[in-house]
Image 1: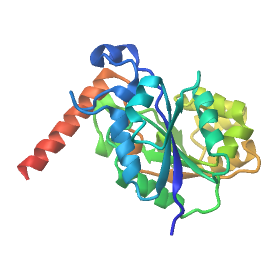
Image 2 (image 1 turned 90 degrees about the vertical axis):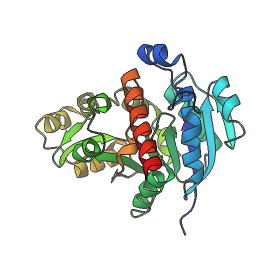
Image 3 (image 1 turned 180 degrees about the vertical axis):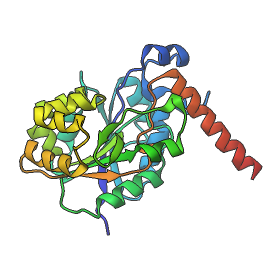
Image 4 (image 1 turned 60 degrees about the vertical axis):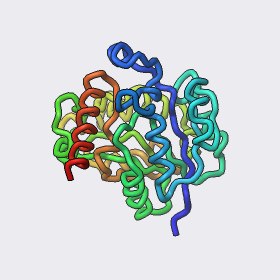
Length: 265
């Protein structure tokens, strides 16, 4: 029997200009994936609640989001000035948890099945401190071959991969390596810059596409001394997020097509 995991849900992201104009929402969590539907944050919470291996949900976000979700989660806390501040506030509530699931609020197509799949894969490698979802470019583009939903990929020896928007992590990593975590967060959408953080040899290896997944796992244990991590192949829906108006429009089209297919069947 798997031990259930507590969740830290980050719901403080602001919308970019084009998305704000399109939705009239300043907070990403409040965007309605289906026009006049429920806010995206409630869809994510529903998936987290239904997931087999998840337990309590602690949400960090602005007052408006806290008011909306207070009866749907176990605890709401104010968002920090930065992502790392929000992480620190959240893990202070869960200091003794061996692992927590951290999730963003902009996962419009995620379901409990995707979460269960990821966690089951993680549990095949017990005793580690970080499990990071990776999605092969071919798999993502097979499911979502639309230019509006394109992703940033890291080119590794095994192929090209994008990262996910959830992570299973020992909270002590954030406590012990705050500055390093903050740097990785800042450069999270720039694979080469992240490689440069690890040193010129790693950056050169990345540029030549010699850098492997195993290399990255080994480097993780060297950077975060005393901790070990694992890359976990995961469903594309864990990577698909919303930053731009055209992405939201395309996701709405996908949902509408799925709903019409269900009605037809």
